Length: 544
Image (cartoon, rainbow, N blue to C red; front, side, top):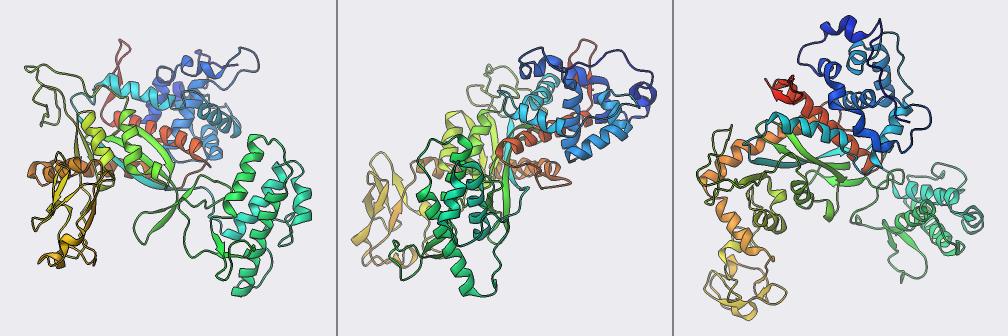
């Protein structure tokens, strides 16, 4: 049953007694005065299917605590302690001096309800509505894309730990699996947690252990009884199959069928790094800097720092690349309709002083991003939606150091031909390959073009023409000026997002994505207050 706050104030209500001590324009004073308008009861009504049962903690209280908790990077226990003993928190949430906080698991319960609902971002959406009403983004037709790695909440596991943990999970989750494991395994006592006691500095001992554990995993998978498994049991079996194969390969003198294994001298793509949180991944921020965790993706209005859309994904994988997620985020930018049409004589309001319109009078949205977003698919999506790509192009790598790049070849898409710097031509095949082959023999420019004895080959992207046009546009001084002036501003929003702690507190994409939306809501609210957010007597939000 949905709980509701009593509008009648108590004698020791903190807001009444000490509300005047809260700093004006701060988030505590704002929530103390306007939490009911920001988080009305109907915002969460769908989470309470029936009117029966004990009343929940009032919506405005829980929503306010979630915003303050993410803003100050507190655990559930720390947040409840602040609600119990910090008068600022009590005033913001409408409690009396003598009121006790609720149990920390209440926040866990509410997060799971929100994450599993049809509108998990409803707190972020509530702040989005405030942003829209203030008009702070009116006339601001730029969006900056960026991402950052957030560290996961679990420890990275090695191959031995993962296999043992996965077999133990199968024993717990799959019916009759414990008997199979007891009968078919010999590499370790899987009723005991932790690693086996071996001479870990002995390479041969480590190799024998890995071989035994992988063999155990394969025998368990092969001898499990045929039965229909529920989702939890099926996930446990799939996890065991994954960890038993991702890091190992047959030994050098094996044909792959005799069951002898060792650690592979390579890293599996999209490698699972923890059985405790199967969705966390390795990521390389630079060539030499590796991080483990998730990637937070943001769309930001660069001049105000307002975050308009967010997404959290595993830190690696082709579907989680900056460009792939960026396309979806721009589509989900719900703050306002950025592509509305204007008449030719209508002036486009622009608080930044440098209006951008197309020849038809349509507002042009500029998308600013670094070279990670400069893929052909991204450029094609922006062109199709009439957005201007102010994106740093990816550098072209010549086949020979200091030699010719792809832009030194002339591509004629209509004729399906490519001309090299020496004037030789070759046809574009159905697979977008260009093979010069024997034409390169005796070419005086070959030393600057290729080191291959069979001649120069090219592979053209399906959107090669768009990429070429974009690289040409990036050489325009106006392009460079706009990029350098506005793109770095998104780093400020990234710094706000990660300030205090880059480590996540939850496991899995769903709960961490919810945290990210709450963090963005809190940061936007704080930013609006810095810009002079106030409530009109008419009930609308505006900036002073």
